[in-house]
Length: 123
Image (cartoon, rainbow, N blue to C red; front, side, top):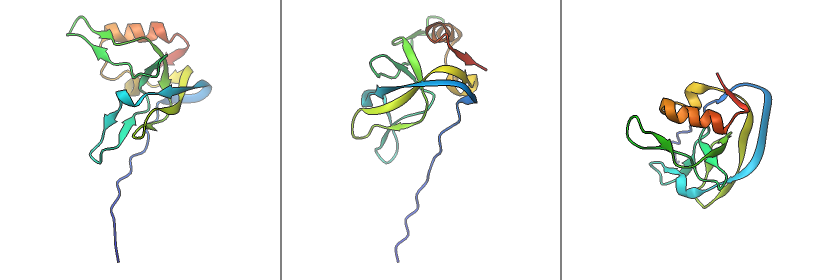
């Protein structure tokens, strides 16, 4: 008899409410993915995505933080990009949790994100 232990992680809920949720399809690139301990590459739900499919990150020293590119949406569900670029669903309008999507961003970067995504309300 063979037993194998698998550990599953569920997506964190980024929505405050599903009301007024608008999503568009897009493509997320494998180049911005994080690699887990088993060698799988994932782009996590709540990641900011630009028009080309890149993950938007914060760069710069404290006090002069900027974003790598301008986001066009927020990734709705975690996407496995181990085997290359994959289709995804991008939230472009709705109510999202500020503690899940904007956690770790500086105030200057948060202002830029809110300006780039005016139809997303962060609560």
